[in-house]
Image 1: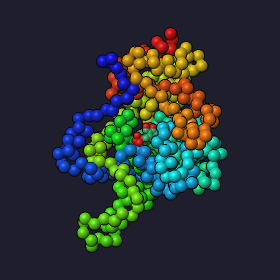
Image 2 (image 1 turned 90 degrees about the vertical axis):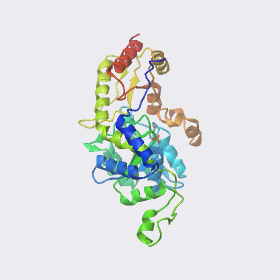
Image 3 (image 1 turned 135 degrees about the vertical axis):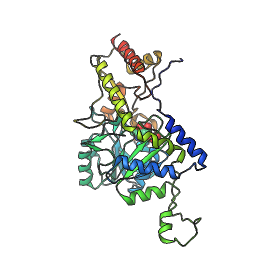
Image 4 (image 1 turned 45 degrees about the horizontal axis):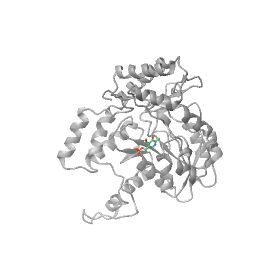
Length: 384
Ligand SMILES: Cc1ncc(COP(=O)(O)O)c(C=O)c1O
């Protein structure tokens, strides 16, 4: 269908294109001045003295952050069952085990009460995921972490920009916060991610491990009389560095992050108004004056909805509109289910949410007409 409205599209302007061309012409394609600039500007955007380490995905960033906080074989890391597999697979990379807990049925964020119940002597860290861009209650999670001496690595793949109690996610005193710049995210570099931390040692470890465990910093400090070609490998690192081509896109996307967010928030309000009388539950708002990033607009079909979620998505597709589902909870995927002997009933709120949710298109490239089209289709399908 020629006028198909996709579920998501990036919003790339002439500035991004010109900056990429500039990088291509410069001859410097991999990590270099543009990546450094993107890191500096990202750190300034988050504020409060954080450092930012650019990587080639949020998955890479989560892996590096967990490695840097010392997660290793036989440790346990508590996270939500209601997330993308990346939040948990990184724990397995390090030979540790994710321990899944259920969500709060209102916010779809990790249930802090369940987190505390899941703590064992092996627990090393917690990975909260700010679902759809609505921040988790980080105050409770920090209290639990402090009480049990656990590290916190926030999965902020959806949360640029989001606030909790008036403070930007990234400044909440977790050990690290990790953002995604995947093509559908609130800002994009195609593929990319950023680790943000206030701990200089953690940032340094991430910088070393993102590039093969090569420590030019250590080299510079201790052997500066050696020639520039010399380097030392101090650990078996990874190949997770961001390219300057990607950073060129990110530099300009970042400048637009607040405007993008305003537009998505306006669209979310319009959706809320248009669906208020339908047999659906609307996505929760951020409490008080807090900022919801509105990465996703997740509608929940109510008991009185005349159609199943599967049929709803099919009907939307017939209307030429792409939808998605966030998320298929991890305990329903064969690997996680079989590896940890998980059962359907283990996380009832996550399972129930999964059965009823549909993510509608919500992105800045959509026109008012596009949104009206989505609204008309949803209303037609749900009112018969
Ligand atoms: C909650 C969550 N965490 C992590 C990721 C991984 O991000 P990336 O594709 O940048 O590795 C995603 C991607 O969709 C996600 O939704």
